[in-house]
Amino acid sequence: MNQAAAYDYDVLIIGAGSAGLAALRAVRRHTQRFALIDAGPGGTTCARVGCMPSKLLLEAAHAFHRRHQFEAFGLRGAAQLHADIPAVLQRVRAERDRFVAGVLQTTADLGTRAITGRARILDPHTVEIDGQRRLSTRSLIIATGSTPHVPDEWQVLGPRVLTTDTLFEQTDLPRRMAVLGLGPLGTEMAQALAHLGLEVTAFHTNHHLAGLADPKVNAALEQSLSGSMHLQLGRMPQLKAFDARAITVGAGDFSTQVDAVLAATGRRPSVCGLGLENLGVALDDRGLPDVDPHTLQLEQLSVFWAGDINPDRALLHEAADEGEIAGSNAVADHPRAYARRTPLAITFTEPSVASIGLPYDPHWTDEVAIGGVDFANQGRARTGLRNQGALRLYAKANGGELLGAQLCAPAGEHLAHLIAWAIARRSTVAELLDMPFYHPVIEEGLRTALRDLQAHVHEPRDTPGPHYCRQNSLDCLD
Image (cartoon, rainbow, N blue to C red; front, side, top):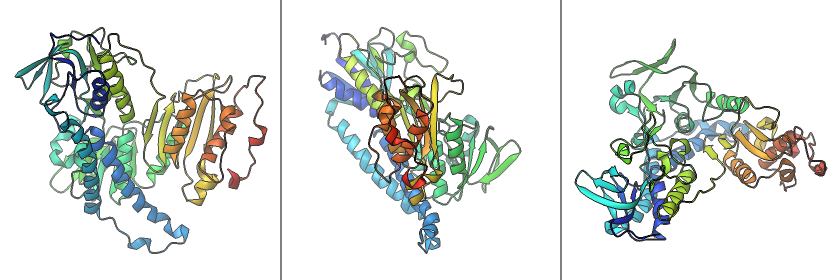
């Protein structure tokens, strides 16, 4: 990296979330002339209000919900169990705070190179802190993250409209809740609240849930969710009335009364007041610049963009990758184009939901082969009373290279990783069927889906089929 003595810093990083901290690790391998700017609250979205507290709530909810299956297992007394919601939330916060503390220590160790304040970009090489202090830099990394979106018409509810920024801070939860939005996060939280025993009504403007496009997988998820909550799909939710006693929420001719509303209508990039207009690049109707997805560079500027501020890949592992790419390119003389990992998104419901690789497209031609499995009769799933859900696989019809998958399945988070690794290795269906499958395991359901997919694949003439791995028609062995 060429040193530029005219600048105060080699790199300034705006944002101390997952992407910003990953960028920091990359930058400090090459230079100590950097600073990390953050207005707070610290601790990363994931640790503070996202991945970790939501999973803590989900684990408690799933554990409590299992009581409904005790009778089928021959276990008695489940009716005497109850969820102590204040205790559940107390554990969520205690564990959350432990995760956050570790993150905060990272920035505390930076000393004066950790700057607390609100940054505003004045030009591609100058940043102003709190309207007073100006810092110059050779390269700039923007990793300011995202914030929950609450539609204007719902803000009149004040503290009775919650987001994931406020949900985990509650010391108790009301009996009746409406959830607005069933994207991945909304679906998780709606199920968690319902599994904890709350009366949940969930609204979604279309019929595709948790980011799913495959109709068979989406139907499996809808069926699963409808067992524990009221679903209102395909219509815009409306705030019809509210007073001190209740909030009336509806969609079309349907209405219900609730005590609070959880707005899960997505997150928006945190760019308000950031000064992006001073970079001299074109901004779209959302106020965002065009970013090269492989270099994360803004046009030809020494300015790089990473993390949840990118609404198309708002996932922690993507944020970490983007931070590494942005940090490495910010200290390089010539930015490098990096290959991106296989797309992987998981929703931690029960059964789990995942989208991997190429997403389902209803307009596919016969160039793409599709195969799947219904877990209703899958052996290991039946033993654990987890036999619901579906998995669908997509491959090149010619040769069978695996392209993508969507699933709503038991142990889906683990199946999703196996599929993502296979796609990353450009494995074919025949190659995957050559792999060992133990018995009895959920992964045998993946094998069943692969067998079904193989029937729709045209193999090269010199590729023998794995005859010993054909369907045996015995549920207990699949």
